[in-house]
Image (cartoon, rainbow, N blue to C red; front, side, top):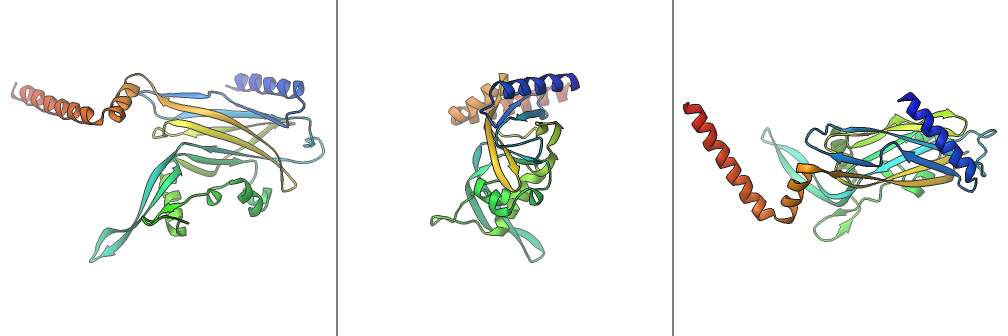
Length: 253
């Protein structure tokens, strides 16, 4: 792995030298993840290089912030209340579009890199995501407690990673970080954005895509369930009945 990383970093460095107009170049060790029956998560390497531009890597220190955002899906967050010694569902909020995966990695804690206003202007950090809630009577700004609950739920599932993974400066102008995708990662297109900050100001950014999809039998079953849900339901019932009947026969023997 160390030799592989050295090769890719040298490649990126050469690309940066060859194209000095680019302030930053990034890439992933794998841009397509295939989910099969044995999939238990994936670990990717994101590497990059800062080019010869207004970002002076020799005299001015710089910081790298990397944001990985997965496909957005509708999400319902419920609040539980204790009634007569029993916890029951009370109010709920529906987020029409919340990232299925969201991770932020940086060379230092965000508060040491730039001001909250700077990060808010680029939507960096979970608190700066432009989330809206559906109240049933229209869209609204989600209450803070439901927004925090969404973050806690997704963090517990390993789908939200706020400043857990560090970005390492490997050499002058070269950096890397690890991208961890859990087994329950959603399928779809992911956006990977890299920002370079100097003296509290954003100097450059770069975007690449990551695709996660099901393959093989898992892909066929997923397509069948979403394209023909009625037939999929009937098939599931017949399979369950057949399995029960076969288990009964085997038990009598």
